[in-house]
Image (cartoon, rainbow, N blue to C red; front, side):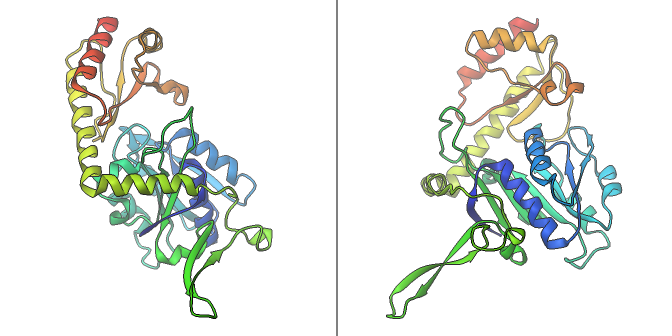
Length: 327
């Protein structure tokens, strides 16, 4: 499974493009998306597909991950794709092998079964098994973490990769190498299935702005960090996040709603979370994201992320400040 950077704005639009690919390839109209997929990604998905003949169905959760039994019940003969996130919005690691098994059960013909679309965090793939190894057909994600600064919220970098049989459904342009009539090397647009080149109703994408500069930055970053460096950064993120969770478990008032394995993000529940966030922000500390913004049932729940950049001193300071507010 090769990675392409075909003019995608960000991870959310890359996900909607993948869903569009699945609808086009299968000729079916039902997309199943897990509720553990980033809520804003799901909003973009709904917005971009609402004018197509499609049905978006959301699969419920169990212990912070997709409920496999409910997912199996939702999959039917009209399902074009199942969309999950890995790690998901809560930081939990979905069982992609089991999800792939539910999709392919009794459907050996690739043209008869739904596609498995996985939205992933590329930084985690230096440590976690890649989605393609679990049978994913399309993998998308946000590449901002690959050396691109936040710059007041952007720019971002959406990427998409797919199996060979979906190559001609990929949005954007693919450049190929050939020889001109004098025998000199020349580069041509091998695939250019864009709306400005062909009939609008045959277009495979609604994305028009090129993100080549962001792709170049990510390429340079990956070439400098290398395979070992990416794995080391992922390992540090995992170790530090699990260390923080272990230390938080010793504080009175902190509970953990999910027991599913996680990479570098996890969810906690604390008393008066909104007030705690406000007070810690005043001290220039971001204690986590309030999940009730998107999940009203998760009041007083915070999602915490720990990257390789966080030091032992910073983690200890975080524990002291949080402990002082909830004790």
